[in-house]
Amino acid sequence: MIGAPAKCLVWLCLLCMAVAPRYLSAEEAKADSTTQSDPAKEEAKPELNPEQEVLARALQSVLKVELSFLNRVADLTDKQLAQAIAIGKSQVEDEVRRFSQNAGRQDRLVIRMAQGVERRSANLRDTLESALHLRFQELLQEDQQRKYASELEMRAKYEKQAVVDYLVSAFDSRLHLNAEQRTEITERLLQVPGGSLPEIQMVTQYGQYLPKMDDQKILPSLNEDQRKILSGIQRVTFSSSNHLEANRPFIVDDIDLEIEIDP
Amino acid sequence: MNSTSARFSAPLFLLALGCLLCAGCFARPAHGQFVAAQNTFTMTQQQFDGWLTGGGGNQTVESQFTAQLTLKIAEIAPVCDLTPQQKEQLELAGKADLGRFMRRVAVVEAKLVGKTLDINEAYQQVAPFTSELRKGLCGEGSLFQKVLNHVISEEQLEIIHQAREQRWQHQYRSAVRVQIAMLQRMLAMTQKQREELELLFRPPSAPFDVQNSNLQILVYYQMSKIPEEKLEPIFDNHQVEALNRFRSRFSGYGQHLRQQGIQIDDE
Image (cartoon, chains in turn purple, yellow):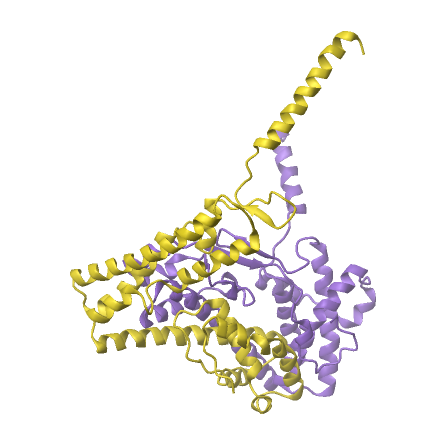
C-alpha cells in the first residue's frame, strides 16, 4: 500500500508535467514541425480567432521574405510557387495555433536586460522559418534542393559571422585587442552554438555594455591588464522575445499571397 | 459615541494627521526622484557620478580613466620597449590630464549636485563631459600625447597607428556586416548579393574610437547615399524598391555625424 506522502508526490509530479510551460529549442521546434498538417485536411482545423488572425497577418511578412528567397534561389515554376504559398500559409496558421497554446508569454518585441548568461528560447519567427525551410525542401527537385540548402547554410553562416565579428569589435573597443587576439576570440566564438549568441537584431545594443558570456572564450587570449579591465566592465545580456518585425514596411514585395499585409 | 471615546479619538486623529504632515516634510527623495510634476528633480552625487560615467556600472571616473590609461600604455609598451622611467612619465602625464578634467568637472558638479533642476538642462551640462571621458582624455592635445611624442620614435608611432587603423577597419566592417545581415530579413538576399553589397561600403577617414551608436548611424547614412545605379546590377527591381524605402529614412543623418566629429565623404 502506497503511503500518503508518496501519493501526494506522485500527484504533484503529474500536476507539474501538465502545467509546466514548454520552451522549445529551435531543434525541438523543427522536430515538432515535421508532424505537419496535410493541406488536404485544412477543413478539419478550427478557424483562427481574431487575436490569432492578427498574429497570422503579422507573420505574413516573414512568409513573404522566405518565399521570395526560395523563388530567387530555386527559380520555382508557377506550380511550385503556388504550392509553396499554400504550404506557407498553412504553416503560419499552425505556428499561430501552437503559439497560442502557450499564450501570454510573447506578444511583442521586448528588450530586457538580464544579469546572466542565458540560452535564448527559439522565438516564433525562428520556429516558423525552420518549419518553412523543411517543408519547402519537399517541393523542390534535386538540383533546386541543393541550391536552396546551400544558400540557407550560407545565410546562417553569414549571420553568425556578423554577430561574432560585432561582439569581438565591442570587446576590442574596450580592451584594445591586437590582430592575433581578435582572430583567436573570433574562432572560439564561432564554435559556440548559434542559440547561445545574441540575436542579430539585438547585437548592436552592445556598445557601451559588453555581453555576458562564457569568459573561457575570451580570457585565454587576454593579457593581465586586459583581464583587470574586463573585470571592471558591466556585463549584460539583451534579449528579445519577438515575433513582430519592426521593419515590416520595408520587406521585399514580389510575392502575392492574396492577403493584405499590415503596414 | 460616549464622552470618553470622544475625548481620546479627537487627539488621536490630530496626532495621526500631524505625523503624516511631518513625514511629508522630512521625506528625503531618492536620488534623481522627481519632486514636482514638472520636469525637475534634485540631483544627488550618485546621480551626477552615474551621468558622468555614462551609467558605467560600478566604474568611477578615476577607474574608467585608469583603465583607459592602462590600455594606452599597454598598447605602446610592447612596440616601443618602454623603460620603467618612460612608463612613469606617461602615467604622470595621464594623471595630469585627469586632474585637469576633474577640475573642470568640479565646477559643474558644484552647480548641479544638491540643487533642484530641470532635468534636460542638467543633462546638457553633464553630457559633454561624459562624451569627453568616453572618447578618452589622452588623445590629441593632451599632456599624455605630448610626452608620448617625445618618448617614442616616428617609426614606432607609425606601428601604433597601423594597429589602430586595423581596429577601426575591423569595427567598421563588422558594423556593415551586421546591417546587411539584418537587411537580409527584409530583402531575401543571396550570398552573392550580400557580398556585392558589402563592397559598396567604404570606411571614411574617422576617429579611431568611434562610438558604436555613431558607427551604426554612419553605416545607415552611407547606405542611404549609395547611388541607385550601383544597386540595380546587384538586386532585382522589387529588392531595390524595398531597399529604397528602408534607406530613405537615413539620408538626413549627415549633419548629426559631422557634429560628432565624424568625417564623411558625400558623393
